[in-house]
Amino acid sequence: MRRGSESTMLLSSSLRGAQQVVLLFAAMSLLGCCGSNGGLLMANAKVIEYRWDVSHQFKSPDCFRKLAITINGETPGPTIDAQQGDTVVVVVNNSLLTENAAIHWHGIRQIGTPWSDGTEGVTQCPIMPGDSFVYRFVPGTYLYHAHYGMQMSAGLYGVIRVAVPDGTVEPFAYDFDHSLLLNDWWHQSTYEQAAGLSAVPFVWIEEPQSLLINGRGQFNCALAGTTDVCDTTAPECSPYVLSVVPGKTYRLRIASLTALSALNFEVEGHNMTVVEADGHYVKPFVVKNLNIYSGETYSVLITADQDPSRNYWLAANVIARQPRTPAGTGILNYLHDSPEEKPPAATPAGPMWNDTEYRLAQSTALRAHPDHILPPPATADRMILLLNTQNLIDGHTRWALNNVSFNFPHTPYLIAMKQNLSDVFDERPAPETYDYKHYDIYNPSSNPNATVGTSIYRFEFDSTVDVVLQSANILKPNKSETHPWHMHGHDFWVLAHGMGRFDPDVDTARFNLVDPILKNTVDLQPFGWTAIRFKADNPGVWAFHCHVESHFFMGMGVVFEEGIDRVGELPESIMGCGKSKLPNRS
Ligand SMILES: O=C1O[C@H]([C@@H](O)CO)C(O)=C1O
Image: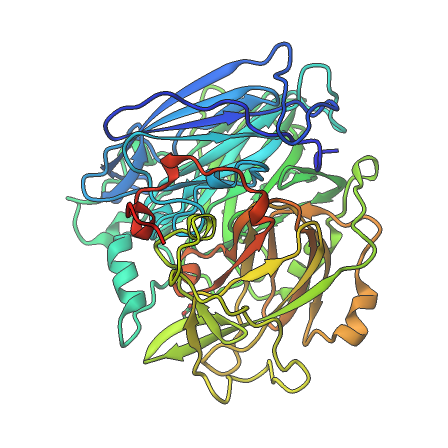
């Protein structure tokens, strides 16, 4: 079982160089080894080194030219391909001319290496020259992306695939393995977007211009008004083509790093069997359409068993918000002489965007694979209710949890706590609940004011915590939104989803304690609630936030701490900003 079988990093880097940060990942053995500070590399373990140069480049992923943040000139960046037991070394050269960077390894739990999580303001200072980090991987499908400002939607992202060790059999079989990374894409720069979100009056980012499949989309250049910046014939924006051999079975690792959009993905004419979610095996179930929220990964199996005399669409459609973006398309290619030949059918339109019941049905269908169930503790030591609201603070539109909108300090919490720095964050406990008996989730709040805060939730080490996310009406009447919540440093059990107001006296009876799936990202539906449980067993400080980049930017997140006294000496490499840089740190 994956939880508890991870072990601690064993390598550190001696590499140093101007503008370079060295990231080391050690994927440790699952096979019964390793206490919390030990670790053996598997007999056939490899060290895989990646050298990444992060820079601004003009790119045209959807045919429209725009400044993007790239890795080695590309967006998405390279796929990290490793096998459990391998050590992955990523040497990052920060060539952004005027910006820092931070890269979060999304889904990697960082047990024993909380400083390696890559979250600016929470676990580390932004990437500075000469830093070195150690990371570890467990098998599954994960993601990496910027966790600094709004650099994620500028293109700084990619996929991590960790294969099981040789000789380990997965609970399903396939012939080929492909990754499909889904993104949404705006033509406005993220700097303009951030300025608008912070402005009074508020300027919303609106819906994306395009949806991308593996970094490729097709914007209708006629709408751009000028051919100087938009060229539909640019090879960069030709559709992504997945070529298949009739009769073969494909594992598609479908991953979403959208900045805003929830998506529905389908392969025209082909059923998909869902077998993995967020790095955990699921009880297989068949779908024609897959809902996927930002920060989630799924593996599905498809068999190329359809009429081989034509091609088929790969299609992603916006759901959960009124779509103003055409489908993102690619081609499933049976015709090896004409890989880009358009399929002879209309682009799949996906389900109704506002069919919440349909989305809820998929979310509740996700169960742990019968042979890979790790049951949750039967009871929790603490329950936190988090009311998600949109608020006005001094005229600014913000998101808040229990009326506190998160504003993270630029001295990372992890460093502040280990170094006993004072005045970095509000040390009063963050609010545990809200007035759930009386709060009307179906109407805009009668008092939209909230406060901005930096307080956090502190857990007793190894305790069991339930968090219930409650969504509510936004500032406008008759509207509530969908939020994908992502937790750093942990996988959590998804105990239940429900519609309406969560009542702890009644709804805890609905918790699935038998075969809940472990995930790191979960959807919260409009006017609904989602209950999760986790063990506070990973010493460190961890963000838990809405994975909609603009919502996190507008305060939609909280911070958890557990076992800070068990965190070893911090590597100097993570320090180098804010108060932690000062020689006199008290
Ligand atoms: O945070 C958001 O702000 C807008 C809207 O609610 C206010 O214009 C929107 O759709 C969001 O998701």
